[in-house]
Length: 369
Image (cartoon, rainbow, N blue to C red; front, side, top):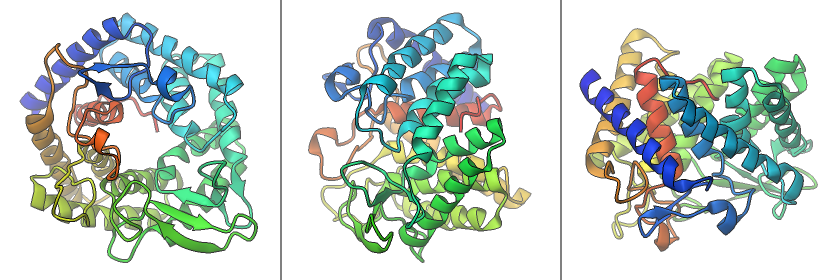
């Protein structure tokens, strides 16, 4: 195992260094025509993926201590921080955006401005809590919607509670996790993407399709968010119900990927055609399996670690992109089932989670979440 992990890590470091040179301050998302454009210009400063390039740089800096990675990560953080003063549609993805930038910066260097920025983002997230429904609102234009991705964002609240000693952040995160568990996780371990509630009463209305095929489908990346998110919530609370939930979803996920060479489909309940993979779901899930491996008995830990290794190795062999001609490290990511322009393409968050998983295997990962 060590040989291929070391090899891929070295390739990642070299690829990030190359891309860093020609991105020149841009924030990457999807490389169209082989090169990353600037997602801040195209989609806005508040786009949900805008923190992943910074997070990737922090991971690589933490592993190598090469100064240019740190300097570029700080540039990305400052660029992202402009969103706090300029964008109107504050959404729940402030967790993704500032855990990977400001909070990572603070963890590595102790920078006090980064600390204050992280706490500011946490307060914005806490302010989205619907008291009647006990959930965090995903987006302002749908004040009753909750999405499975939020299980990663609530880790910002746990961090804020630890830092300040204020239990309100942790309580909000945990109440939200309970609501997600009740309405988005099914008995078979599959996960829905969006739950719709009445914003006034907090009453559940229905599940919605979101980025999967339908409301009854099992969007691959959503299931991966759930594995990792509930495993992290167990880390923060030590409540066994979250560990059991994460394992339940992990079992469903692992059964599904056995049929596709350990590379997840974009939706596990999609029609036979088109057969779409989503490598980003695999990278996220690999990190989730490795997190789970920390909290179970030795036999189960070995099993979860092996599943993560199979996902990483299969994906890197099929979708690894190591040349300088095209941007992106891991291809094969599908942003959404009903968005053909983003079928099986490199995605910045696939690159991030691939790197985090490799560093976890080497015991060198920066704990960002």
